[in-house]
Length: 393
Image (cartoon, rainbow, N blue to C red; front, side):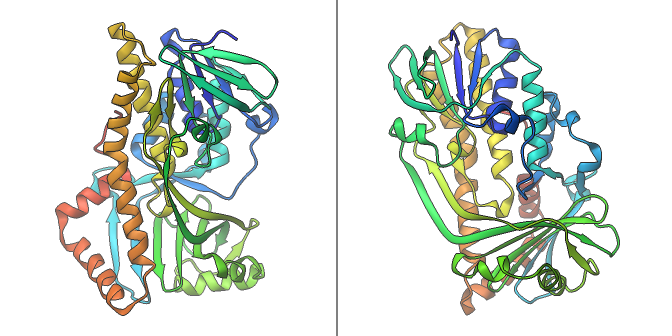
């Protein structure tokens, strides 16, 4: 039980963080409550993630991307945003970004499987079927008590145990919590129309609908609706639901057919007031839990891991204590600088585009037109969505 860094949680953020540390000489362990079987073969959960160019690079550099079947990866070349019942759309094109595509699409469970395999093939230890029951930290180290009765003392504890983190509560780090009072329902559908590479985000009155391109005439359908109305979607027959989606996108994809069960997720936003404490740091959703409308949650999680690793490697090169408050506060400031505007901006966007008062409808429509006409602003938005001009921190 002699480790330098303990990571709580074996999601992609935790796994990518561990993988990035392989050649540093540090002894790293991951503590995960799921079984090894679940990590090796995660269940499909309905979530398909839009991957930015930066995240693609990070996953590729970490020997994770190449472990995903190429047939399960699709390219987003164009995107359009529609408002209400209007046919007018805000368009984004890969040519404007100067890239072959705006981003990539693949399933969460495939990313998690690939991430686990990459870490398993390395030198990181993984303790499965175990939870952290207590944490104590001081200026010099942190001690974890595990549900298997063992304890370990390390130089740094990194929490990647979801936006509902128990260890974050143990460390008394407060969070801003935002209940959107909406539920996200996701599924896959097949369609009979021409093969598409365009992502559609439709801010319709009463619900938001995203249709995201997958391979072989398949698409990911993401519906968000007031939680008290979610049963309208969940109780619909597959045929009725498919017909409803067809109508909502004006038959753009031809006849559609539901091919998976429906998965539902309540939408909650969290933002930790601090991303660190003594000998303790937050990454992934444990630090920032985003609304999915701008598809930044997964990508932000990868970025947080990469940013913290960058600070740790700098400290090692300089002979500085990598788990010190000085190092962790540097990570906090860098990650906050990037995430805070996006978090607040996303929440404001959600508030506006779910507001159905007459003035809000006019503003919504006007902003889409303005977005098409103001090229500098559109470039900024495109770069935020794709991270083509950005570099890992």
